[in-house]
Length: 163
Image (cartoon, rainbow, N blue to C red; front, side):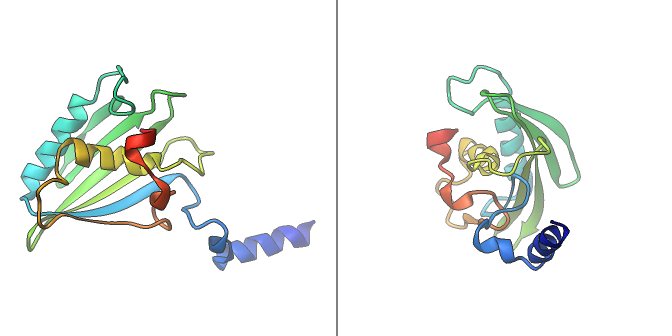
């Protein structure tokens, strides 16, 4: 039994499980966005959206249960609590001026220590705010970059269906 555990630890440290489980080891998501708008404007729009969705009435799926925790220089922080089962996720957005406007790094992670699979909820925590603030509309510089290795179930997430 000890040999089996040792083999699992070695295989895991070598990244051999990624063929079977291509996601982060904890339910989380990291996404990079480019916007053709100055960072203070992008930041204000996201903060406004978080505050607009701070209510508990979740008739609009998961576009509720957000909490704005504050801002530091170039960073805003918040949480999202799911209406079903009340899972709480923490998130942040970090802003940096870029050539065409603003680069935003978004991160969300489950506060439940045992969470591994999230069906894309951590991605949708971030993406729903971007869509709600209409930052993804009519912006020729808009891009989004992520993948399954840094964002749990990114390729399967369907924010309009599940959240």
